[in-house]
Image 1 (spheres, each protein chain N blue to C red):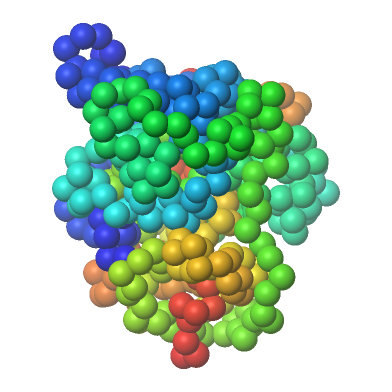
Image 2 (cartoon, chains in turn brown, yellow):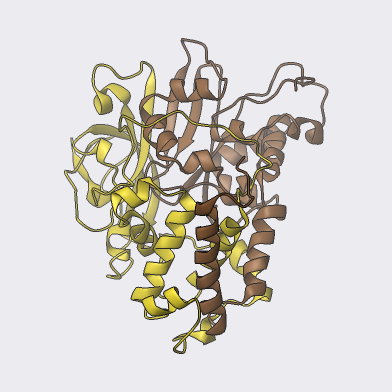
Length: 203
Length: 218
């Protein structure tokens, strides 16, 4: 993580630049600073990847819900209270022993906000966007993930308003866990396809 | 457009640097860019596709040299300037000099939860789809100077329809403010060898969403 202190001239320039714009718009009555604060608070504290982890945990423990996710992920996810901006048209893709799914937006930064929150910085970089479609196994290696050689890889480039949620494979040793315990095993990266769910007891 | 945004499959980029999922922002100014961008969208001067086009229209050297929130901020300055809501002089001065055009559209704090929770679905009534699941289709050699969502790495390549999504707002038209022009939307799957040649990774399938005007029978 970057140091936010006083020798980052780029950061200082950007701080000044956004402050200027926000000031102008506020003086003109075009934005309400309290609305800006409310938007930030939503995505900093309320909407994040723990939502998606709850969806995955339910899919692992409730076959009827998993079927609903396969047929109409938007409705199934909305039934848990997760809906809205950048999640209007959801599709859930299920990892299997034969196939691993990975999600990217090569053209910009499309990402399922209601279940995963804001995209991480790396997801928006040309590095990830360029390479995820051509060399996904090399990208996965950068996340410490090595798939079996005979596993197929399916990459979903979300070029429209369809948003993808990867349902990782349920890890071995998780049989006795309830939904809350299962959700703790589900990482954000595993729901993008850049990771695997944690095994119980693993760090 | 063949702009800096269309990076899928391009060589020369570097390693991905993972980060902890608790990291939501890297600086306070990023938070303000997020909030101001979403709040300014409520003024109704542009749409989703026009805002994407503003980002990809940044000069390539600027685009590649900027973090994503910086891209958002630069694009927002451009969108607001073209809409007549701010002037270059105001951006330099950091203060308003003339009145805003649409203060009545200002997004109020109490409306934020509702606006974020309802989002902006893009499915519409539209023409019946010409293609069915399982059909082979070739991506058109479609390279408009304006906005499009057909990634360059799929142009001219043959894939298979794996899903239909009804009709959705057509970005190429919507970004130019020429109307939503809904078109059937499909998921198209490609074998990696078809996209990237003989050196492609084995056992790799890549799919995109494509609107019907991007497709030709194959």
